[in-house]
Amino acid sequence: MAQHPILTNWCPPGSIRAPPSATCTSRSPTSIAPRPSYQGVLGFALTGRLGDQTAFVAAGDYHHHIGLDRWKSRGGSPPPPGTTGLYHVAIRYPPRAALAGALRAMIERRYPMCGAADHAVSEAIYLRDFDGNGIEIYWDWPRDAWPVAADGGCAMVVEPLDLGDLLAVDEDTS
Image (cartoon, rainbow, N blue to C red; front, side):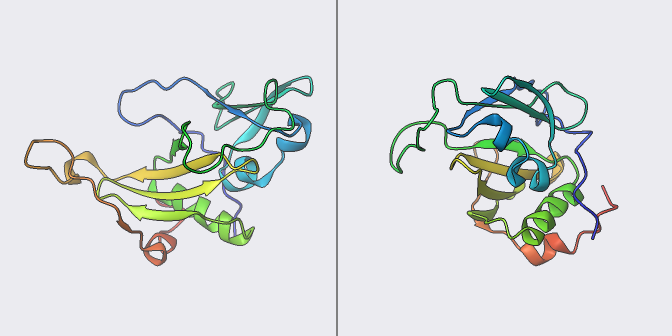
C-alpha cells in the first residue's frame, strides 16, 4: 500500500487564513520531529529546527504549519482532563481520499484513534500526538451539501463515522 503523501494542496477551510500553530512538548524536537503522528500518519515533513528547542513541520512547501517547542514545557505533562486549554488542532485534508489515506496510515502503523465522527458538514478523525495534544483531521463535504438549520446556520451533528465507507475511497480520487 502506498505511503500517505505530503499534502501539497493543504489549505485552511473557507477563506480563513490560519496562522501556524505552536504545540508545547516535553520532549526534545530532535527526537520528536520524526515521530509517526506528524510525519508518518498526518503527512507533514520536517522543515526546520531551532537548536534542540523547536522543530517545524509543514504540509507542502510552506515554512511551517506546526511548531513543536519545549521552551516552557520541558519535562512537563499534558493538562489533566477537565481543565481549560486548547481542545485540539484541526487539520483540513482537501480531498476525501487524503483523509482516507491518513486513516490507512494510522491503521498500518497501529496508531491509536481517539474517535471519529460524521458532522454532516465534515468527516473527522480524532487522535493525540506523542505528548497528548489533541488533533482532529477532517474533510469537508461540499458547501451546497451542508444541512441548514432553521436559523440559517449549519445543522451540524455528531454521528458515528462509517470508517469502512471512508476506507473504500480510492487513493487516486480527489
